[in-house]
Image (tube, rainbow, N blue to C red; front, side, top):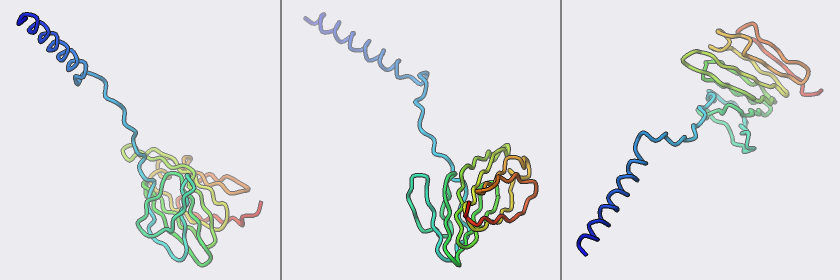
Length: 163
């Protein structure tokens, strides 16, 4: 009987060793979802400014709030907001405006990236950052009647919101 139990014990040890070997660091790591870095932040707010996420949630904007790569900024009458993106692009959104940040991606090492904003109504001033300096074609502004390719670094766009 003792011999039988020692054989069983050996099998148990072999099984444990095989299991430990299967779980060794040489196994490929399990991929974890990587959170997208924020696109920028709200620098200042005057009056009633709302941020709407791609998921449809709305929140009142205040200085320091994070801005996602796809967000909508809505300003009320006599209201405005200033936003700074990660590449140092600055957007100033005027009163009674609706601006969609449709796309933002930026690699801080290579300074490559792209910005696509859509001004649905109101006014916006943009001062381009690193993306505009290294690749001006990567900055685009849409309105209901035109898409603007940026060649300068500081400009103002106004849209009346009527097609």
